View 1 (cartoon, protein in one colour):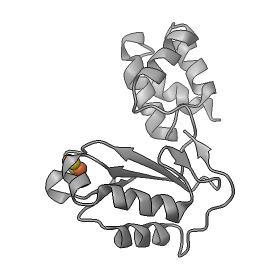
View 2 (cartoon, rainbow, N blue to C red; view 1 turned 30 degrees about the vertical axis):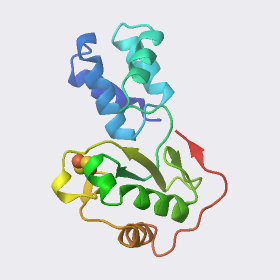
View 3 (cartoon, helix red, strand yellow; view 1 turned 90 degrees about the vertical axis):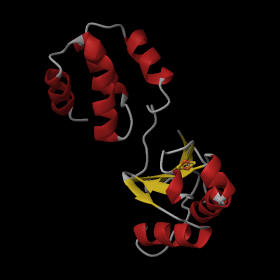
View 4 (cartoon, rainbow, N blue to C red; view 1 turned 180 degrees about the vertical axis):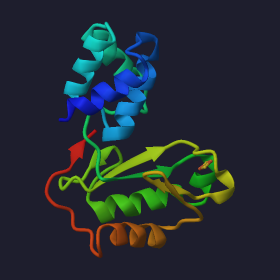
Length: 163
Ligand code: FES
């Protein structure tokens, strides 16, 4: 792990503990999760206990302590998306990837998440892959998208990881 990168993030906020949430957000954005070494360094430099940092990291649902896949696929199950087939899309992707929502494929390629309203109900049903929204989805379109991202064919590789 490149601790220089973590130091840069902390320096960006003047190593000010009142900016600890922003520091964690930036680390999460950089690595897609909060690596243990990064949390230890942040605690030390922000003059916080490791317990305080972990409490913050586990309190906010947007943070993950587990590594995420290269592609994080979020399926909206908010009301508008749910009534237009969001659950069927999620189940199709679970079958395609061989994992459940909340898990990551063992090759580290995909993480699958079920989320609440993404604030784009007019585009329902919607899935977001990393930062890219995909509107008016259905099961076929979603599995084709995943296959394309996987380079043609999705093949579940062994046991998934949870996180
Ligand atoms: S319910 Fe899916 S974007 Fe609002």
